[in-house]
Image (tube, rainbow, N blue to C red):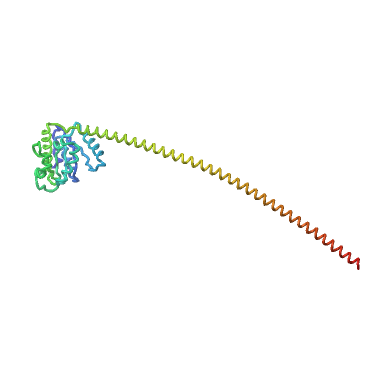
Length: 299
């Protein structure tokens, strides 16, 4: 018999589980799908985004987490950490940011599922017992284990049994928490703090924008003043150029006029000299003629 052939039981209760996904195993999806129809409960999964472990993304992470948990109102029955990494250091470092954000109460509602496609060499309890931190987180004040292995290579019957064990573990943990959901108070406070911080940043952003706009207007005004000053100086310079051009034109006219006057005087002198030379030639000719006449008379 396969998991898909099981007849759904009568639905008598809904479980809201927040999944902290820290695995890359695609078989995890088959496990989540299986839980939705073969347990006799409505099981709703809310996938919690991973912490980016980056200070620049911290506020964005918190807002995303708060919105995710708000969808589970009045609160989740449990948190489920799904991982395929069996290193203690990884599990401890993975839990740390969630625990810091959700508070120590998170551990009362936390279950861990190890997704493996190969045989697990020891029981989850032994894995927890090997770490003082994990032992303190998972054992103090609680009865029973809150860790389970889901073997993706197991038969369908075995997988079904694993799912039943997991749901029973959630039920037992919920009873140990006196039937109380994980409180949304922390998210409401966190959301308020985030809203205050967001409003503060928005205010700072508006002030910065206003400051930049003022600076922009100052720069524009300074540019316009400089432009006007340049245009005025340009006009003044162009006026001076026009004056110089007119002056040069006047000087050029005076030069041409003086040249004409000099040419006219030179021409007049030449004409006067020509007339004088002609008169002298006439007089010389008269003298010569007179001398010749006198000489002939004597002879």
